[in-house]
Image (cartoon, rainbow, N blue to C red; front, side, top):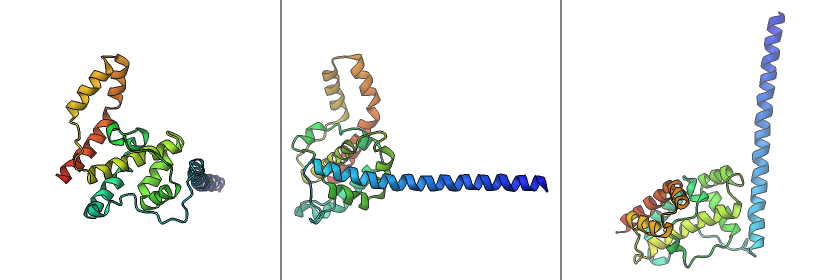
Length: 204
């Protein structure tokens, strides 16, 4: 009887511990959602953005003459949230961002989170542990801009990997530190290369 009582006590203690852990996890998630929502709003206020009464367009919306490409744009944009490097690193294609300037749009950010569950999950995993809120959105929106620009502007030439490597070699001037950084970023560049090439091939 004493043995049974001890076993039951151990089981109850174990179950109570699990229940408390689940409760704590739920509370942490709830707190994160509230705080992260406040973070987005505060970022928007810092940038003077307050468009809560305006209709929010989907991030993959294109110009009228490219409406037939919107489903493809949607597919590519939804793929962004499946790879963490799209948020941790800025795009290597700096030339395509010459005319782009980041402005935090709280309504668009919240709309994107609702439209893409993977984006919400990625943000939960990365912000603020790996990256700041504003940098997360800057890297994300810059890639959306590149995708839409490639689809809507057929005059853009995407440099080959060899051309990129030659440019990198010229810029690095055989500096060992720069070479090490380049090696660490190979995976990121390759991911962006695949995205750009896939878009280019689809549109050819």
